[in-house]
Length: 103
Image (cartoon, rainbow, N blue to C red):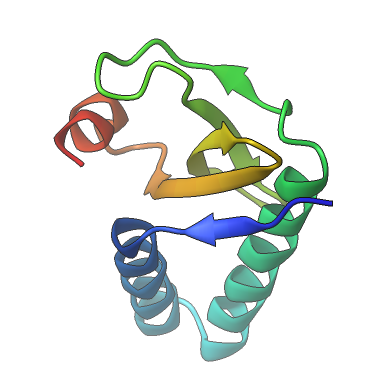
């Protein structure tokens, strides 16, 4: 089984989303988001072919998948060997093409 490698930009995204959810919702919901993100990363590590391929110049192999129970949060990742690199975690309302390509 592969592993999920969370890149620094994705870590920052997770922290920002956690803070936003905690401030505008509840701390319990923010913690559920955090746990759901970790569980989804583990699923991607087990099955790195999941998700829709996205054609992005900087990341030709990038794929997109949603966080379980938080479907508006999108994970952008690349399968690398037997592992997956989590590049970004972006809310669906954001311009994800611009954000991912700026990474």
